[in-house]
Length: 348
Ligand SMILES: NC(=O)c1ccc[n+]([C@@H]2O[C@H](COP(=O)([O-])OP(=O)(O)OC[C@H]3O[C@@H](n4cnc5c(N)ncnc54)[C@H](O)[C@@H]3O)[C@@H](O)[C@H]2O)c1
Image (cartoon, rainbow, N blue to C red; front, side, top):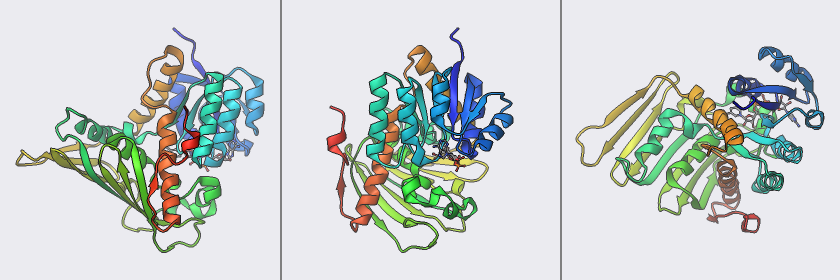
């Protein structure tokens, strides 16, 4: 049996500690890093580790003894950390959003490819069973057939997260509104509909002035296979917590679906056109454990056994591309933006 993969955990805020638990089920954490080094120490203690803690990732990588890095730092730090890790010969597991912009994503990809290391971006939504079930229903031989039109409402109350006081509310550090809110459902759109061809978006009036980006955004993607998908996003909607939002409705070639997320369970309804009544599938497990275990487990198996993983960097880069294209369109009053957004950067 292969020795346990030795991770460095870089970024020890809320999510670093959370992901650390799943990493420890399939690997070890040999060192931690956060500029606020006490956070790294607290995370190590919470995870029951006696690993070394550093304020700078360069020091962590220079010390050696690692096989991979898990990047759970703030979005603005993903690209420099990933590039430095790749140059140190480490495989990279990076949290979503992969980076703020597409050029940053390509920089990360090129650094990994130059060093022959693997990179995965943790887009867990498509792996959570209720959402994965929808992907299964629209597979070529699935009962619903090809998706034609999808809409998701991302209105939610983000006030409890206090984004206006942190890097999350600043587009220069976060990437923009979608990076902070609806990144998950955008990746899932892609899992359902394939590659996008065009994006068009509009900003609404600013509601909460503490955000340094427009906090209301409506957008539409059109996909090469023909589907259209619409997402509406607003950040001060008191009736829904984040987990209750984004439930999509979809019309497909042979029927339709509606996913209704609640705080403690998720209802999925779907029906074929030739059926009298809808199917109802209730998910009492929201599926977070399953998704985190699958992505990090697959990452380890990919590195150690060359087993094809459920995700790579492609999902991360294309999701950032869709978000950046939406901002670009909205900034130009809804002008249709064609993809790829940076043809000159595409790998030949
Ligand atoms: N997959 C998911 O479901 C999920 C959920 C939550 C967060 N995330 C992602 O995890 C990342 C962190 O989110 P969070 O909620 O923990 O944010 P957070 O603000 O709680 O923590 C971010 C941490 O990054 C640290 N940091 C900043 N610059 C750094 C650098 N150069 N090197 C190392 N660390 C640095 C900060 O000091 C902070 O402790 C984000 O990219 C976020 O999108 C993913």
